[in-house]
Length: 209
Image (cartoon, rainbow, N blue to C red; front, side, top):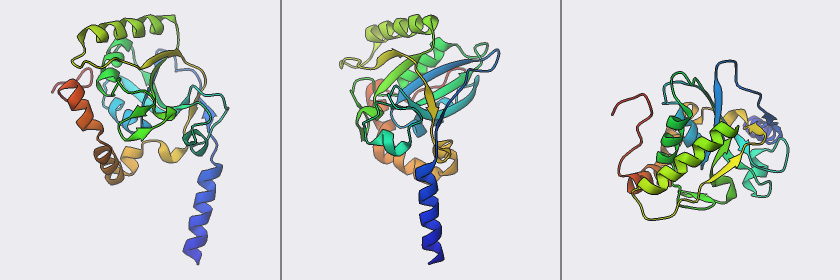
């Protein structure tokens, strides 16, 4: 009985967990925001990049303030699962992050990534200023000319609005729950599809194979 009460209490706490908008990047650092399907996976991928100072899983691109995970997954708020990246531009450039982003997603599917379907799992580059917009467009043009697959790229480039950090249990999920995370990533076919599209696993900027 006590276990049941505890489980119900934990479930209620998760349901009532509030999200909040994030603030600007610290002095000398910059932000990049990418939506690439499940934010657990995007966070894990970008944590491998030298120069990335922090990653936060969250929600962006919707019409409801402070959305919860439950609200977003109903596909009625307009938000996408995304990751906000704070990075040191002296170590890794925005252009390098963009190139890595393309290699870690399937840019050919609309409102879907791998086994996850619906608008919350759309891919998008959320730009924070005119410089990022120009870089994202140039990166997309380069991709269209060099991509090793025939399908069209449907990933959006849009102006970033408020980004709401997801509930605490989503942050660093791959570290907190490594077995569950690895099972999800494998069973969802993420890495298999990436190899089909790109021919190999992505190599983070600043690292070697």
